[in-house]
Image 1 (cartoon, rainbow, N blue to C red):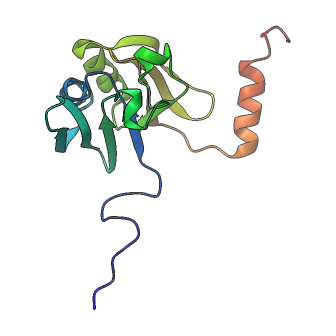
Image 2 (spheres, rainbow, N blue to C red; image 1 turned 60 degrees about the horizontal axis):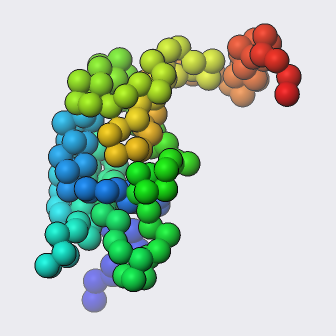
Length: 163
């Protein structure tokens, strides 16, 4: 008898599952903007909605799906376009943050902030895709201890108003 792993091969314990208006179009965009690889997509027959799409980005999978009408039993599964914002940022570590940032802009992302050398040891920037999702882009450039990060943060924010 074979045993089945509770986590499918290639997956990690946590996998992003994004709800997106026009999820199929968004999958194509993520291939172009971030170099994702499309693994699969399944549309709901007769509805023209993507029930499940799977992308691979680096060593991680990202699941995507369209919003569904509330009577499908998922009334809170809203895209950022419908919810008017997002509270999540997907974080990508890459060996060339500046190159990925430029690629994302060329594909149609908007700048949240340009890559910069951050106080915690990453070169770090953020973009917003045309579907409302935020993407943090980073290259780790310096190993730091917790004390070094705290000291650098104190220096970085020493001129900020309290409050």
